[in-house]
Length: 109
Length: 114
Image (cartoon, rainbow over all chains, first blue to last red; front, top):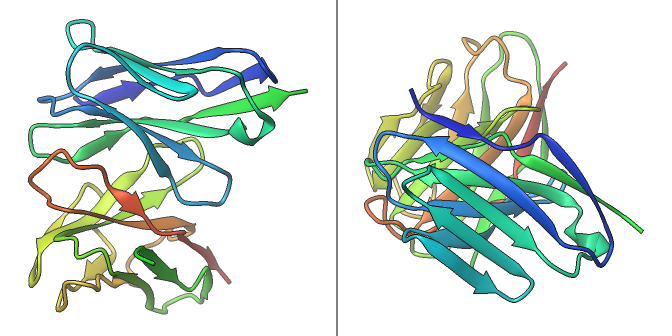
């Protein structure tokens, strides 16, 4: 079956760095997406990885290892507005997104 | 300003009633999707449409129906056959359903049972 695993909740301190992990088993692979979702709002696209390695976008970076079925999202210089859920999704061979349950990130002052 | 508009933001359904959730996009995207989000679960695909006048069932289509008569519009009807409709419903679109382009989401409709 298809499965995406990510931690349910994480806590970090303002100004610090946090890494949110995602492991996956899917039928086919056409890339991995990270989305941010504030409570009660729409998910917004953060990053996309299809090749192994690190993609950096400002304070956010995303890493992919296809052989290990593993990705992480790295958030640097955490701000209070980064408090949100972070969703990992894998695009399968039919170009459909398979979603993890999301990681709720709590930022403390 | 391009985007995806969902309405209403909140919706209440009575027993035995069908309700329709609206989704409109002005991004000129070919593909549109309906997801259901429940606490502690990942988004689950209800229906999707890769082109006008065509749509396919997702993983949890039972008790739902859709239409795609216009490129811009993809309404979702929650029928009385859906016994547990309380959830957050998200509509999304992407440039194409056959590419690895990201999906973009509307602000969602929260449906509750009266």
